[in-house]
Length: 221
Image (cartoon, rainbow, N blue to C red; front, side, top):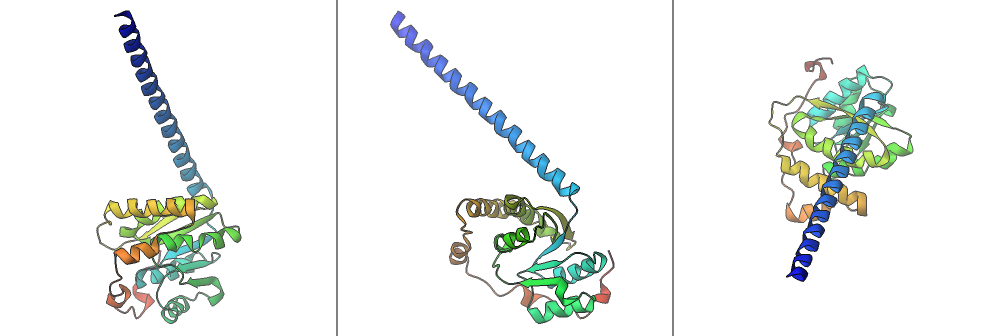
């Protein structure tokens, strides 16, 4: 009986120690997470943005970005995966933005690669803070990816959401692409080719958008 009781006590102590260790690890991870989040938030608002990154997906974003560039004349602008070059160049020219101030990049195929294809170029130019422009319904997912991809190169960002009147995207898209960003961070692989196999591309979103004939219909900001 004493032997059996001793074994039971040892098992209970071992179980208690494991629970205690788990609680300590959870507390440590929580503190680290809060510390990292607080640091990123501090950097977001303490650093002065040095550039603008526009995520493609709708002509509205380039129109908005061109007007934004007009009111921020010292900042270069990168457009990732946007409209065709002729249209994009016309939009910026209409806003009076010199061609040497904006860069059109077409390497991205989705929101994750909007960031992964440009983050090293931004870092190589010693850019540590940017304005991030996209539609309001898309900003949650873009921010989740940006925190991981841009944060991995010590680049902070200030979100600039374009009002659309649309509901935010489902949160599962943010979770999915956040995981893809973490996979990219660990392996350099974005998973974009697998995504295309699972979800064959549909007709282009840009083709369904109305032609924007003039920038004068857009308010100053």
